[in-house]
Length: 422
Image (cartoon, rainbow, N blue to C red; front, side):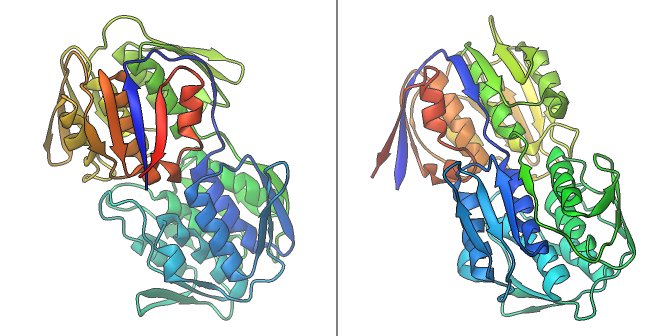
């Protein structure tokens, strides 16, 4: 198992390039199952989650490989085993995104209930309800979701809202399935995230007929078949936001490339409120911070609100602000396992249900800490770079699920991070 040893405090300075979006790449890779032939997907990051999906697609019968340019080729000419096995699916919750395209393409899918980060209850009932509305028959058998549609799917108006708002993976699943459904499908309360827009753009390249991208109403006119295509994945706005906080928490200066500020309005708003300067560039931004940090209140929401995937990172920053901040988590109310670890580093954070009250301190102090999930891992790395002394972070395999070579990128701009196997 790998650990990080991080010496601080440091002041980051330089240029850092954002990788392709993991959350866009995963459903796009799954949607390649809808077309017979070889699709080429560019700028897919080398991550543990991507490797899991490559393995999963291969187990279904697709031929998957990276070429010398690091482009991923998915040849879905033959899909002869529409079964998502437990041993693969349990490693990643996003594995559920094969369900929709398999039912649409093969008329049958069997997928184990998915795993992933332990950040609270994330049921897949909305996915199943949507597929049922399209005409699939669904039942549970030995811990597996079994969906069948021997006569194909039929378009319908479907409401996908849930107790915490729209569902990104649920929208992706129903969107993919409906491209081959007979007639018209309307998805109400669809997720508006840029990753859903990127998926829809990929599907439209394949020959789908989707309108309404970026809005809560998607309209899909079903087609008989789709064709394989080539596509470049958008930049990862969560990685970009993490690097923005990295510049701020170390009082440094970073030029962040492959970053669309148009997709990060809420993030930019909160960071500027806290005292961070963000200057747009042609393909990203320059982030600086001088002086003390200003406390702020933040509530996570579905897009275009502040993303839950940046809540932990922003908490690390606000822990060093002059005063009290309140963070309200409305997407995953249990997503506060990083609080105890930050408090071990001399932060002053109190959790009360879905709310964290953050009393700013003068500095972090190095300590041995443990990563509990993907985004918490990133937050602890940020805190460690600002802390005085050497921090040891265990279980960093979590961070490898969502950040491509993060220690190499940060070390290149002034961090002092050593990865060790223990």
